[in-house]
Image 1 (spheres, helix red, strand yellow):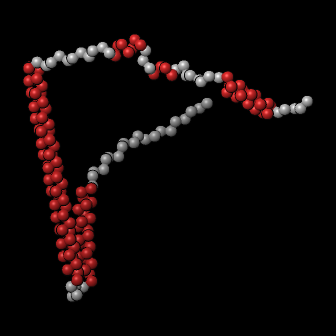
Image 2 (image 1 turned 120 degrees about the vertical axis):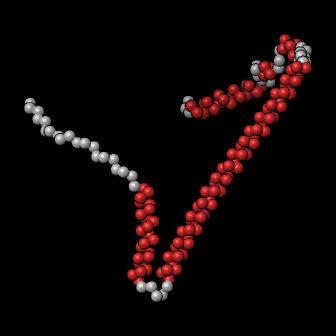
Image 3 (image 1 turned 45 degrees about the vertical axis):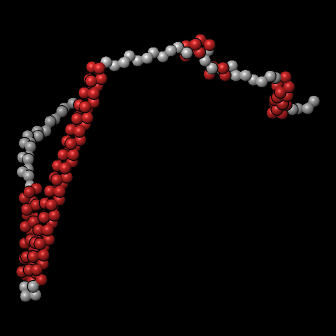
Length: 167
């Protein structure tokens, strides 16, 4: 007796089953295949007549037209308000830009004036240092004054007495 491995035995059984299935089988039909087709009762129901819609009355038509006109008016009013808001925002931004440009130009003019004072060959070195420090300290002082806030008062502390626990 030969020992046949389990794998070989299963392969032989599979081949035998395939031979048996191909010889005596009919075409396989899926039992759920006909489910896509409607039943006879459904076919009769689909042939029923479709009801026609009831025509609208003259008052209904007038009311609909009035509603359509008010909708168009409201849409136009909303569009105009959005446009006005956009124009106002653009104007504010433009004003801020102009103010900033003016401030930058003033700073440039001041710096140029300081450079013109310093650039004279006749001015001694001490005066040049005074002019340079004067312009810098003034701007620093203005910034510091604007940023200073009064400090909050320190919290009142009670004297701490030692506690002793005896066991």
